[in-house]
Amino acid sequence: MIRPNPSTSHLADQVVIVTGAGSGIGRATAAAFATAGARVLGVGRRAEALTATAALHPAIAAFPADVSQDGGPEAVIEAAVERWGRIDVLVNNAGVFAAMPLSQVTGPRITQVLATNVVAPSLLAGAALPYLKVSRGAIVNISSTFGHRPAAGAAHYGASKAALEQLTRSWALELAPDGIRVNAVAPGPTESEALTAAGLPDTVIDQVKIDEAAAIPLGRRGDPAEIATWILRLADGHTAWLTGQVLTVDGGLELT
Image (cartoon, rainbow, N blue to C red; front, top):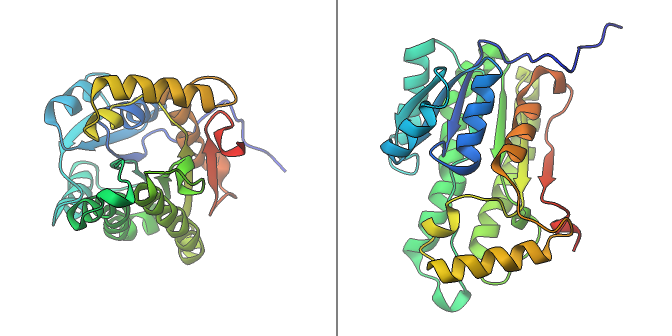
């Protein structure tokens, strides 16, 4: 049997959608796919941030959209197809973190978390499905260590990521007959703007980062490029016999 050369990528000229591409893991992922030869639609709510991402590589096109709003997921898929005529990979990276102790829960906050972390990936995958069937493509969902490791004060965020992990496994079974692979990466605490976006003050964010690094066996928070590396590997044709898996990349945090 002739085995593929792991030093070469099967991503050249493929069309990849990356949501949440304006910063952090999403930006690093968009850049990594473009460097690997793919054509990338970088999606996010902030036009200026997406412009900065697109400036990293000429193969990245910015598409401002809020995937949690009505019509947002469908508009994203239409934009990719209109530009390139196909879709090979969908990376469901857009998400919101909410520090929400039980004493502070409100219906709108729960709805916001679920709309972004569960509903939007589902609608994006559903809208992309006809094109992924043609390309026998891949979906990579971005979960979190806290999708399977409890964290006090972040139950609803964790629950939303647990739901995404179960969607990953269920979609993998459902879509296998069409040759579509579905996997997930579950990062641990990684440098991004998520804590700021959650509305936490700078002093709290600084302490959270110190506490997280101290709790991680390898002694530090992650770098977005480290997570992007694994997203590419799960999307690449070299992993064509891998589906329904959740890969945790967290410096050992889930072991504690």
